[in-house]
Image (cartoon, rainbow, N blue to C red; front, side):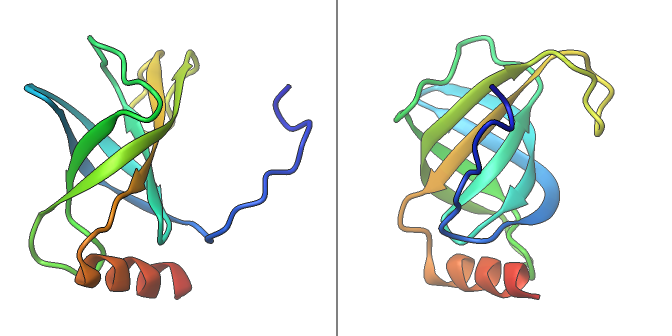
Length: 119
């Protein structure tokens, strides 16, 4: 039941909305980042023809905070949920929330996210 327990996070999060490209094997899907933490990204994906699976390895391409270039970071899918409510960002009636844990991102990405979340 939603809200029936208090989730304890290891790292604080901060809203950060930018486009994202998710690559898995030979497939691409677009979406947007909703928030960031030192360890991961919360994503909103509008269309998912082939579902993502927990523990699946993906590449995430995005523009980190304070950076001028796109980066590609390997990640592990930790959460996938189909949502059937109106998206506040896009107005779509159905979309997916995806949580991705970054796997050893470059130091400059880790530092940029840490600085951004700490502000």
